[in-house]
Image 1 (spheres, one colour):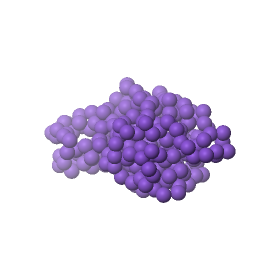
Image 2 (tube, one colour):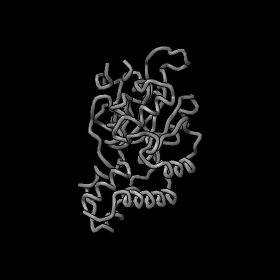
Image 3 (tube, helix red, strand yellow):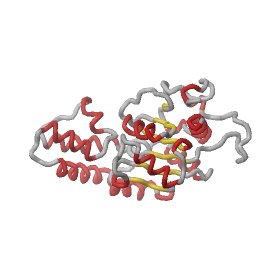
Image 4 (cartoon, one colour):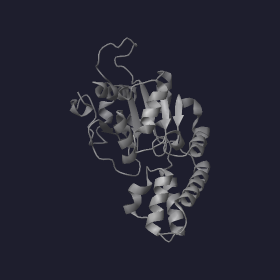
Length: 257
């Protein structure tokens, strides 16, 4: 049965971020052979920017500064073209919007340099992120970092956050297509030797949710700067502080059925 069909007592309401915490504390699923009353997910696949670290505002600042150089002022109308998007996508949007003679490749390089500099100066974990990673490590649940940011930005964050949290890491260069295509999450599951249906992806933007959903993962969405609409097999929380192993196990089990 799809996750969206589970009773409210068993799964957080996908349309209510505030109702989820009351339902994430325990699962009555019988013995699993692991010593736990519930089975953990096969793996948890984390987005980076806005999900594990508070960098979405830095990406917006970088895009806004480059836009200003081109005579543009970014507004809420530009949010879908910036937040959650790869550098090349946002560079293309700025190029089309401004009509500049500068190439998309030039704009992408400027965006990447600006964003990397801002990330290097300010890396702040999102609330609950490190605690959840620690719980997964203690339970020996494999994890992946699945980012649409370039490798140099991913490595900056890993240098601060810690590389040992993750079994594998993927950056924008590691797949032919990045989010919202399913390729990054399919690649992460493949590197772990797992079926995506047994994995839970944790995301913060509609673009990332679309990628994970298309790959076949159960999706836990914790919106950062852009609202995420309720959808089948997408569970919304207002903070990673409300997520735990029991909830992640329920989401994976519901998706695999």
